[in-house]
Length: 472
Image (cartoon, rainbow, N blue to C red; front, side, top):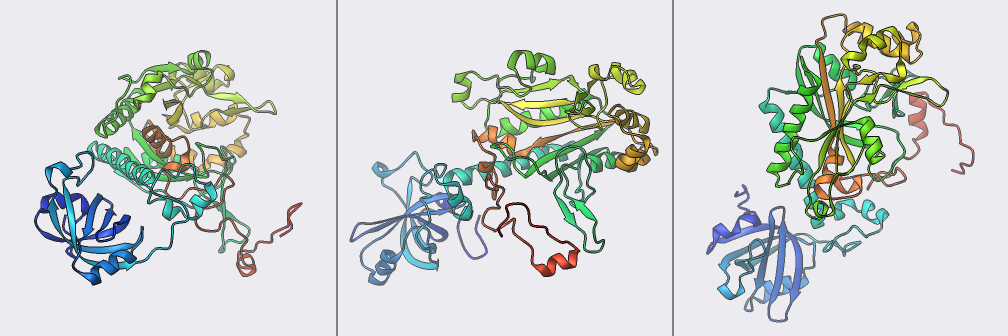
């Protein structure tokens, strides 16, 4: 591809042998050998070696002043290397750029840490403070580009099957169920708050009521959960919902999408179709509902071992002895247990149509067939001890929507970061996010959370009380 500026991408230089070209990018390495100065230049498509030959003193002076990570525009002749000097193991190993002109587009101070090798061992605070530098490293470039490719392939699969991509709101209603919400104060409604979405769950069900039948979005989700290696405050999910489907229909669609996407990316799947195991059997065999079926040889070869976990209990006991849902309250019980739910009987034995996709020890996604009639959703809340008034206050808008011809439907959310951890072999979620948070919940690069200015607090009608032990 030739840019409008006349720039040639480094990865395409081999097709321009003998031509004078302009490349733009970063100085990866400079090697000053006295009479000759060698460079490796880098852009998003690869690297190429360039050399400044004796004879042009002004050019040589510029070459000797340049350091790694300077941003440069280089004019040069693309020369074929002699056969004995060809580097077959690298891109552009058969060519070399004879440099005729150098323009420094921006200088660079010495890097805060070495990005020429794997940065995984660098102190986390340094990496995240200078995340834009860390992102230049080869591993982070590979991870973030692989993330983009995975999403693009899944998106293409879904478009090909008549899914419609629809965005749902970021400012929504706070609900007591699930994880803690991140809340946003309303200036126009003092003392009232929005919540950031933990998932698009209710909106995507309402889209089924709206007649879109096959929906998806690459959704941002925010949950105030305790942080750990595979969990952060923010994550991205490939969110899907389908009307007029059974549990099998959804699982088969997702399995086909994952299989095509990862195999087209060059990965190998251990077993197809994906094995299916009940929650009970998973707990008895593996001691967890997230398990790794790979052998040591599989791990060494980067094999992906997917499996479905099904037949989850619908409800579990809370610390105070009440019932709560294991996954979400909008699921359907399995057909043979629907009567139990409607009668409020055998609560501890009711199984749900929940299905989790696991891979290499991580939960890669989870979904279910949903309740689509108001009486079924009311029965679920009644089983959890909600009064009619409490149920109405919590999900009254869903009960109202279900009165107007909501079709049977089901869906799933696939965690982008969890899936990328499997594809890249990374152990931590932050290694597949561009700007993750620290373990302490501090944003990368920018300084958040931090106090608001008094003027902002006053405008929002908020008064902050110092917490015990707060010396700020």
